[in-house]
Length: 216
Image (tube, rainbow, N blue to C red; front, side, top):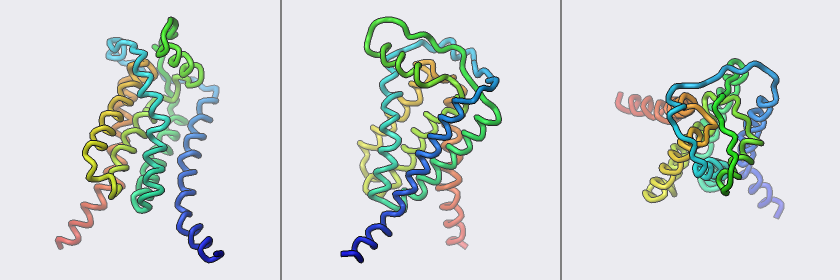
């Protein structure tokens, strides 16, 4: 019995790596507490985008989508999880460093006053999530990374309907950041670009090097 327990604990040690994700999120929220001068991110395109409170739904779904995608890999495909957590934490760490060196904020968030459940949720969100440290958007970065990496899982790779659903959700999450006026368009591009760059470094580049070595 003790031997089986030891084997089980040893095989489950990788689960502890998920705490790195929680730690990075904690560091992010700590950066929100700093009393510093923020650089305003505001593009002309931001003023042309309407405030659509209904988009608060995909914005909030992010809070479940990201950890769920990581925990699924964690408990079903250890190898996929190792690369996923590496990519996720690396990007989060880089974002936090950027926030510390170049603090940013948006200055166009509305009050969200009025009736309706979506406006009510927006007001709750606005009260707890300040529009600071916005570039790059960690909301967009994490959503894109989860979508790109979770389907490295052998069990999910061939599930086309799930992949399409995840793609649609990740796109809606990115769009939600500007439609509820929490981020600038520049923040989306920053978060998405960072996601693809780190995905290339962790996944695509090693595969290209491996194929090149095999060819020679």
